[in-house]
Image (tube, rainbow, N blue to C red; front, side):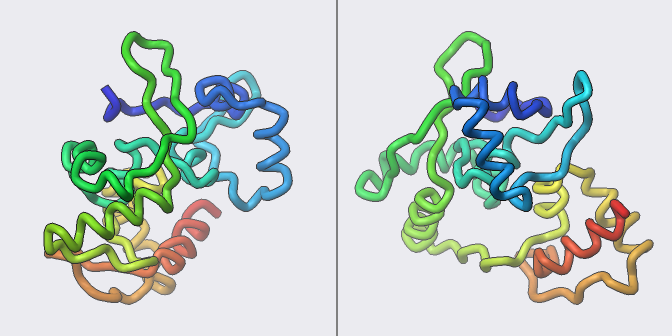
Length: 188
């Protein structure tokens, strides 16, 4: 089942589950250290990372990861290959979890955004504004609890908390860069 939560992995374990050359992966993040997400913990002296965040840093994602990131229903996203066959991208890899069943496919994030835009037009759904996120979306993306962002950071860092930049439904939208400043301040 693709919606299963993946545990944080070391870069070597991540490379193994994506069938990547570990040396190339390490070189990729050594050449661009800012792309490496925040570590989630440690295993045998090595930092561990959220696999979805590592995928996004590499410009790829699973369907479940995309649905979570962009706020779509996973069952809808799984139907897009039939609804938008001309736009549907080829997979660029797989995630091997060591469990029975087919491996999860990886797709280019930008290509799925194109399909999502076409699907938004088809359904009359308002597209997600670029660079704006709700507090819930930001918490999910950064791998922290929603309560941490809403109840703790917003109160403790009032002086740098960004002003809302609009609304989606009943939730305020914030510029992601403003929330990143709060995230960095909260992490010291």
